[in-house]
Length: 137
Image (cartoon, rainbow, N blue to C red):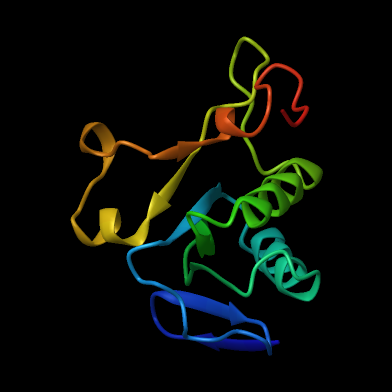
């Protein structure tokens, strides 16, 4: 595992990580955190357990976002990341007791500054699991 950091991000990559990813297909599942030590451990665990080949989290902040990268068409990869999120309690539960329907975000959407109301996820948690039970479809 390789770890690099700058003023903004702490990056993790597996020894198998290649740069042969299609930039139009690459995106991330995001975990919004309030505990940087926990998030550091989660990112390391994701790499060491081959959940993803690349992830990062906001540096020098008590809260922020962690991003777990894969291609949008990697169905088995999405299932692996979602199972990891479920197993590690990284998906918020709303007031009705259901998992929040978080979305996968393409990097091109981030580059185009699609946030909030402007962001429309092409893929979301409900495509993979029942939001009430957490059971895969």
